[in-house]
Length: 268
Image 1 (spheres, rainbow, N blue to C red):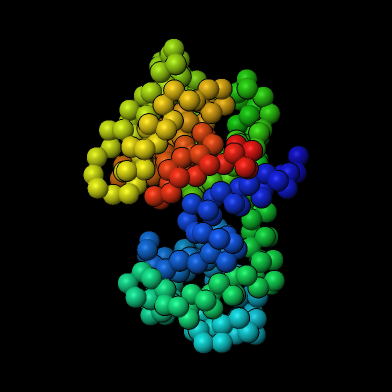
Image 2 (cartoon, rainbow, N blue to C red):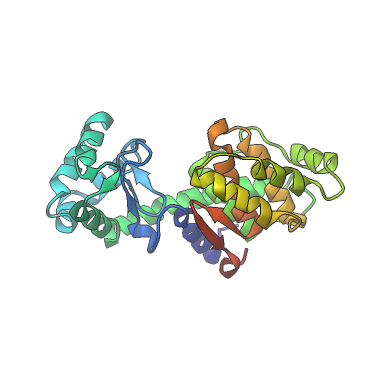
């Protein structure tokens, strides 16, 4: 079935909301992750080559209209090699922080009607993929059809991590059975509570351990276990970050990137 509009709206609010504040379509950030600049609702970027096709599609006149100072350089960056493009957009930054003019102009471009149309087309494609994956997953479990919570979890997975990396419902059911009765969430919360270090992500993990303990049931528990098992395919140093993010979707809220989120307003 087509993705309900309110499901898509919730996913667009949640997934980009972990990265940027305000209008997700206008979200821009600097080179904090080696990608040069990351722009828009799903943080399309120069490093992975995902922003370049969008800039080319709207055309140079539209870019220059929104970005009178930096637009010509952005067009050059998007028609160059990735390494050359990164060098151009990195020159707009102090460290990993965009300078005010570049940030304002990028926000104006990403919020323009032409670029919003490009974003929506790509969001629709991600939503369709996420819905297809969620539907396929739902056919393997006894819990019933796809829900908004399940769709939003798969939307974030598709955007940030790709796919399930071989995880199956049987693995989830076996994990819950192995840690019964009512111990699967404790196992995961113990893992989060055991993370040590001074980073904000670790502090988030410790907070989530306290917040989520003994509050997972039914689909929340299934999705929290899915989160834990899928995080095992991530690099070890990022595993708790994956759990913070997808666990918050599973549980309807949590600590991510130093902020406490509550997704009750989105029906989670």
